[in-house]
Length: 136
Image 1 (tube, helix red, strand yellow):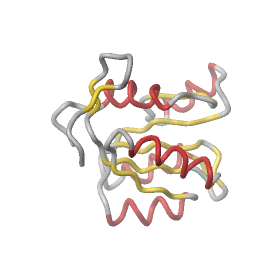
Image 2 (cartoon, helix red, strand yellow):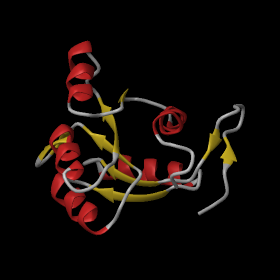
Image 3 (spheres, one colour):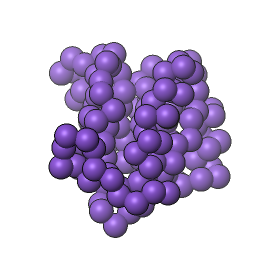
Image 4 (spheres, one colour):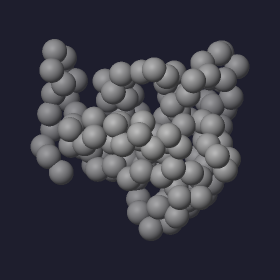
């Protein structure tokens, strides 16, 4: 991992994290992976709930960054399933951003809801808000 860095044009200090990224659109997942790796994060990609659960069984993560609509389930199910064995913070990435969508995700335990399209800086801001400084 790299040392803490600061986003250009901001005062946000970035602490490298271990992140599970679940996104069924592979090119989107790979692009987001590269952007987050530039900030020093370790990223594991899953394209489905099944793949994410397999990764969660063998790795620990600081946060789950998850698309809501997946081919074999949804992000709310996935977060609840992973939390049965590991404490993890959750961030939803979704094309759905109505107040009802956001409330449903918060009720399921997600700490943040980002509506697509979003900027990677938004993820960094949320990570800084929801994860303690000592976890890395």
